[in-house]
Length: 559
Image (cartoon, rainbow, N blue to C red; front, side):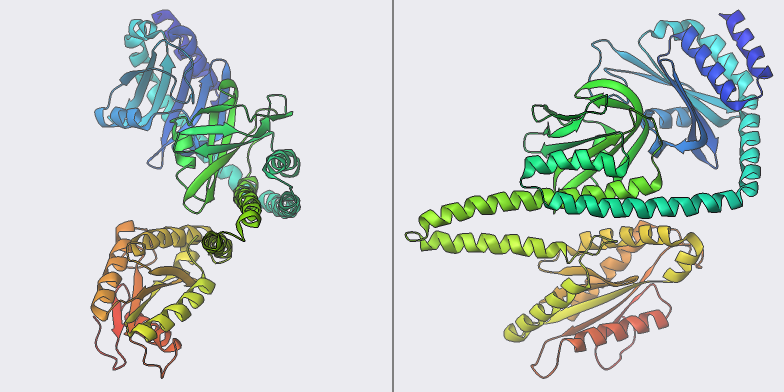
């Protein structure tokens, strides 16, 4: 084995091409140590990035290194142990890490090997095998090999980065043309998505909806394979509807049922709204049988806080990459499909309900009133879909206006205090100028999600996006002292997010808040509450931002 590794060192030293160098290294390790799965990672800008992989005989080289979030197949817990200990770590498991379902009855041996130079990690090799004795026999030679290769890997990565920067500088005009074409492609995808959504709205029932979604979705969105799965979390099961077989044919899979797999990809997709989870180098399945590898995308579909299923897509057939535009279109498609499923379900429920009403209308007036209330709930849910802010997912200005009018009237009738907190993200234009509007959108979403979750604890309260980077929190039956406490909690919650903002002195994103409390007297309108809170917000920003201010119509000092 020593002779083999010595020969490998000579071959690698002569190999100038980075891709071929990775192929020679991983192929030799797989052949000599019987590794069936290998991943080579390097340290770049204080992050661990994936450079290449070898699964059986399927070699992949990533010209643009992948982050671990976008790569499926390296246990982060094992990687952390290797970083902390500075030496190789291993574990025995019952299946390969990236597998959804159990593939073998025998154990798998996981191995994480650090590649170090002068006491610092410059890379890692992750491997899986069912024959660990080959590694044990060659462990000494492998450690020596990694020591020899450490400086070579470091130098090659630096050369690759330098070449990438050089090529980037020379390709600005070409990149502009690519972006122009990309925008044109995105607009085309949006038009096709609009046509697709319109076609799905005309489906006569759920079965036709599932059928048309896969048939037309693949055709309009240029996706190799798609499938729709429905979930039942009370039984922890998933059920198929329609999907695509390995040859690209549309097939009915309503007979397919399985426990929801406990896998990082599935867990991430089912825990996030309006988000497409994409993993490269993922196992691709037909049923529970793996039929290949490639990128795998999942988009959960929701009815309020209830996950009703997910849309799966992959590139098994043509192995084309997934563009950012396609990823965004898949997200929009998942949202539209989820809404159509809910609408069709509600429609079927309403049809059944109306049939029952025709039989009972003369005898059971009480039941009729209950049914009408149920119909009202359905209509309110449908109306709420039009009252959600498209960017952050929280309530929008329309819902705020309606709720304020209702709460003002109730506060007047009951002579109860009504409080309003206006919130503004400090220096947000500078944040957009520094990081770009896409990161600005991400920042607003994180703040909105965090603050909405906090406000939900207060009964009958409402948190909305008021406009731009401004939010509002409406608190019925809440006095000034309680409003002040809520404002303090909101300010602290944003501070705990620790969102970086290098453009300001504090180095992180902060918010300013103004609050106002009124007990309606019948002589003034609700605009008076908004005006007071807005003036308080202005004073909070004027006094230095990252604070809250109370307006009590005598313009008192900051609180």
